[in-house]
Structures are given as structure tokens and as C-alpha cells.
Amino acid sequence: MDNSGQKSKPITLEALGVIGTTIGIASLAFVFTAAWLTPHRLTPEKIVSALKPPGGPALGHRRNHAKGICFMGTFDANGAGSELSRSTLFESGSYPVVGRFNIGNADPATPDPMAQVRGLGVRIMAPTGQEWRSAMIDAPVFVAPTPQAFLELLKAGASKDPNAIKQYSEHHPEMQTFASWAKSHDRTESWTEDRFNSLDSFVFVSREGLRSTVRWSLVPMSKAVTIPTDELAKRDPDFLQEDIVQRVQSKPQDWRLMVTVAGANDPTADPTRAWPVDRPTVDVGILHVNQIQPEADGPCRDVSFDPTVLPKGIETSDDPFPAARSAAYRVSFNKRLEEASQYPRTQPEGRP
Ligand code: HEM
Image (cartoon, rainbow, N blue to C red; front, side):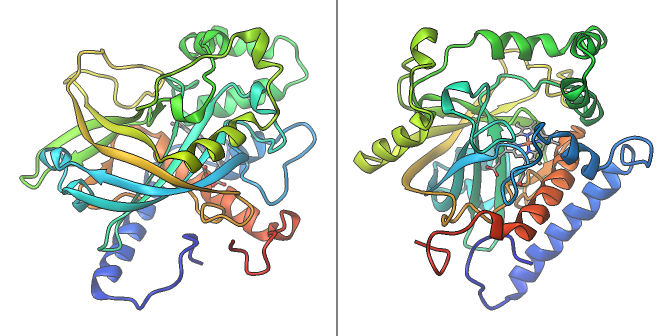
């Protein structure tokens, strides 16, 4: 089944190439995950099940980052990314984008002021049919160093043992960077003021075959205005959604896409470890968000922002997360499609 939410087009030879590449990536992802997908360790089903809130999953919704709103826009590439990657998406030009602003937990009813993590998914489409999907968050590092550790953390969080998280954190001191950020960072008044980070690393392959391990970030062009903690709790439960609708109605909202290249010994397989701040960073273009649509009928509803869907010129790295995420996002995607009647569309055709 097409999970793109787009109308079907005639299949060209080029498109068959893209399908081949996508299947190739999916098979590679499977081989890669085979190391951790063993019966006694980790499966995508186990990890998706561990994400479920105490009252059970919200049927028809994403199993994580469940609350969100769709956007449409463009990625306007300035050509600078072509030095690092042969992807046509870095050639100067404007490419259509479907995306989703979201909140990082499993309950779509979470009040926006309670959100610890905010996220953004993008699907950038090239005229060749190739695409680049990415799901990023506003944290500077991830909470767990491996998918296995993430599962252990989820289990500790759900455990009845009051010491479970303490015990986990004693074995995983690396979670402290994320934990301190989550506890203390100032919340902005808008998704348009947040920076979103890939955290996982990927490999850019240039036309000459040069390989650079990179991470990327969407850096907001709006100035951040933070909300004092005592005021945050008084904000409307949907203040982020109301804000984004208003801002985009008045003018497009923009982020710079910045690509950072790893140094020779930087930790590329562990998203809990930031790279030194002096690493070379290339400004490759601007994401313009120019339309917002509610998720129930919007174009992001049936998209999985699977981080292994990559155009030629971008590949996965030694970071084990994208493969693990791909497998988990697929399980979540299949469940929410099967349960679609529990999350009714409001328009008869499913599209506004
Ligand atoms: C093993 C680690 C992870 C697991 C198991 C996991 C699981 C999930 C699942 C099940 C979904 C819902 C997918 C769907 O139904 O389409 C999701 C969404 C999302 N995840 Fe993860 N995730 C992981 C790591 C990460 C990391 C490292 C990031 C950020 C860098 C991230 C950012 C997001 C975002 C932004 C979304 C929402 C995407 C959308 O709007 O559809 N996740 N995750």
C-alpha cells in the first residue's frame, strides 16, 4: 500500500528505480536490525508496545508523537549541499514538502504546555520521484544510546517499581544530558521558534563518491520568545496548534536547513553524544511552511516519516537508530491504518 497520501501516477522506469532503491534500503534496514531483532531481545512490536500509555494506545493515531498538525510548503535549496551530496534535492530549486508539527508522546490529548519534546516530520519530494523523509526533535541529544537501551528505558518508565528509572539511570549515565535539557530548557511560544535536530547521523555521498557523515538541523528564522514556567501552565491546551495556524495565515514561516559534518573521531553511532560545536556546518537552503491543515483530513495523516526513506546521495550510517525506527514506524503505521475508523476523517473524501 502507498503510504504517501499522494494520488497515484503512471509508473516510469525512473520510478521503478526509486522503488528498487526504497526496497533496497528496507532490506538493508532489516539486515542491519537483525543484530538486535532476536527473539529474546528487541522487536519493533515490543518497542511499539512499550510506548503505549497506561490507558492503552490511542487507536488510529501514531504510537508516538501522537498529537500533531499537518503542513505544506517548499524546500528551497541554494545549491551549497551539492558539494556534499549528489542528491538532486540539493540542486538550486524549490521542492514540495509535506510535513507535520508534533508533540513527543503517545497521547494525542496531551495539553501542549505539558510537552517535554516537540517534533517535526518532513517529506521533501524531487521531480524524479525520489524523496527525503526525516523526523526531528527539539532536543539537542537523544535520551538513549541504542534502540535496546531505549526499550529498557520505556520499560523502566512503565514499571511499578518506584526505583526502576533510578536503576536505569545508574546503568545509563548518558541519559543525564537529555534529562537535564528536558527538565530545565525554556519552552518557546511557537513551533516556529524551535530548532529541530536529526540527532541520528547519515552519510552524504558526493558526485565524486566522497562520503561525509552528517547530522542536520532545521534552525528557525523567527526569534525565540520563551514562556516563563508559571505562565506556561496557564496556556491553552492547544496553544501550539492555534499559534501555528495564525502565523502561517499571516505569512510563510521559515527554517534554515543546516548540515553538520562529523570530525574523524566523532561518535556517529550514538545520538546521546553531541559533536563539538566547531564542526563545519553548511547552510543548504530554507524550509518554507506556507499552509497548515488539521491532521484528520490533512496530507500528513497517512505518511510515515521513516528516516530510512532517503534519496540517492544520502545513506544510513553506522547509527543503529534509523533502521530500528524504520521497523517501529512501520508497525505503528500499519496499526493506525487498520484502526482508521477510530480516528474519523471529517470530510467525506478524507481531504479538505
Ligand atoms: C528506537 C528509537 C525510536 C522509536 C522506537 C521511535 C518510535 C516512534 C514511533 C512508533 C512513531 C510513530 C510513527 C508513525 O506512526 O508514523 C514515532 C514518531 C516520531 N519519532 Fe520516533 N522513535 C525513535 C527514535 C526517534 C528519534 C531518535 C527521533 C528524533 C531524532 C524521533 C522523532 C520522531 C518524530 C518527530 C516522530 C513524529 C513523526 C510524524 O509526525 O509522523 N524518534 N517514533
